[in-house]
Each structure stands twice: as C-alpha cells, then as structure tokens.
Amino acid sequence: MSWLPAPQEPLLRVAVAGGTHGNELCGVFLARHWLRCPEELKRPSFSAIPILANPEASAICRRYVHKDLNRSFTSTVLSSKATPDEPYEVTRARELNQWLGPKGSGQAFDFTLDLHNTTANMGACIITKANCSVFAMHMCRYLQLQSLELPCRVFLFQPSGETFSLDSVAKIGMALELGPQPQGVLRADRFSQMRALVASSLDFIELFNQGTAFPAFEMEVYKNFGEEDFPRTEAGDLAGVVHPQLQDRDFEPLQPGAPIFQLFSGEDVLYQGDRTMYPIFINEAAYYKTHKAFIKTEKIMTSVPALPPLPSALTHSL
Image (tube, rainbow, N blue to C red; front, top):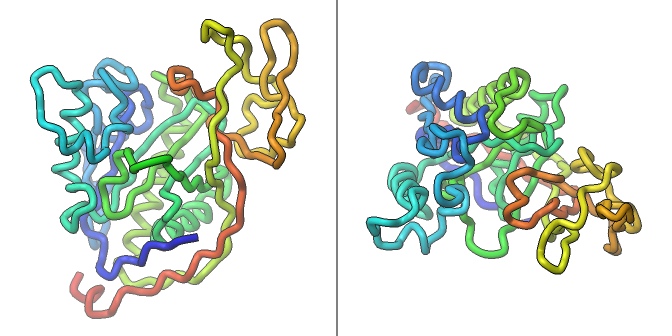
C-alpha cells in the first residue's frame, strides 16, 4: 500500500459538495440547506463551504444534463478551450476546478467531501483513491467508530487511467456513497445518516487541526479489479437480470460457481472466476447505460500508519 504524506498544516479550506448527480437527493437537499444555513458546517478552526455541484441537473432531478459531471475532471476536459456548444457539465467542471483547484496545484482546497446516493444496498461507503493519504484513512476509521449502527465500508478506487471525479480536484478528497435510495427520491433515514456522517467528518478535521494524534490501526478495505456486464443478446439487449441470490448482497463474499444472473429463458449464469469476489454497486440504476451490473472488488487488510499531531506552532496559531 502506498501512502501520501500527512498534512503538515491545518486544513482550513474545506468544501462539502452535493448534487454532483442531480437525482441523488440527499446531497442535493443538504447542499441547498447549508447554502441557506451555513453555520451547521462551522467549526472553531474552519468553516466548510457548501456547494451544489450541478445546479442545472439538480433543478430537473436528472443525473446530468449532457454528460456525467463526476467523470469530467480530467486534464483533457479541464484544459480544453471553451466552445459555444460544449456540454454544460464541461463548463461547470472548469468552473469548479477554478474554485476548488486548480487540480494538482498548491492552491487547491485542502479537503473536499462529495456526497452521493446509490440505488444499491451499500449502506455507507467511503470512496477514496487507492494511493490514499494517511489522513483520509484515519478519517474513514473515525467515521466507522462514530457510525456503529450503520455499516461504513471503505472502497479504495483504482481508476484505469487519470482520476476524473470532483473530489480529485482537492489535495485530499473523498466521496460518500449512501444507499439504498431510489433516484429522484429523498428518504428521511438516508438524509439523517448522511448529515451525521458529514458532521463527523468535519469533527475529525477539527480534532486534527487542534493537534490530536491518531494511532496506527488495521482496517478492512475493498479494491476494485474489474466490472461485470449483464448477459446480452447478439443485438446488445439485456438477456437476463441480477440473480435473486446476488441482489442486495453488496460487500458479501461471492464464491466461484455461485449464480450471478438469471437469464430471461430461466437459466442461471454462474460466476466463473477463480477467487472469492466482493461485488459492490450491484444493479446500480445509473450503471445500466455504462454496461455495468456490478463492480468486482477484493477485500484486503491494510495497516494504516499513525497520524501524528500537527506541530504545536501551527495549532497554536489557529
């Protein structure tokens, strides 16, 4: 496991984004609430900035207007020249990059938390980069300890190429997935759970800024190693559905030979892999367009080094 170094200064420029996908309503309505009542995001050493990331998609309760905003923060998109007919999300990605970044620069925000809902039975899932920071992993552990009644798992996402998500613009970024919740629906329990997890995230930053030290620990994490598409006809149409024995079993072990799909003809399709897999985002509604029935992950145990306190001279200056 490769670790990015711990911050050497307090985290003062913090953002919480909702509505990156306009039909994932916990983040949409939390962002709107915080824009009216920002004091909820204030802590003694900093104030987090609330952001409604994709206001146009949020206004029409759609995932996006023209293209997925959360896949638009690549160097190609961010450095492209503006054109009159470009997708709205390309324009918005550049705006957010100028506000929160620029991506990869020393001027970027210290930390960004991006809020999402999933239709899959994921509980709470924190997504961070596979070459993650010690700080991010300690925040994940803190959230797990503060959320004992709700499973809070950690997904170390390894993209096949350049990072492309909104949270990748900040120096340290994470995404919070919470489900199940249907698209375009706001559930009171998920809304309260997300609100509490955001509050705990900000509390952790405050503890770090005030000079708290956090000891080393062991943690279970999940890492992606592939994707699985639905069975399809020669014309490309669906030929089957997620098997009833797999549905809603995100993060549970799937053994070789277990059924994963049920064809419309009634036959079962079995998992042909040679190792135990832990599927996530099972039957996620947003992934039908991208030909993903679920994401394949492996579960590993990782040793996270201690997060040392900030130098006293820095914390005393807050």
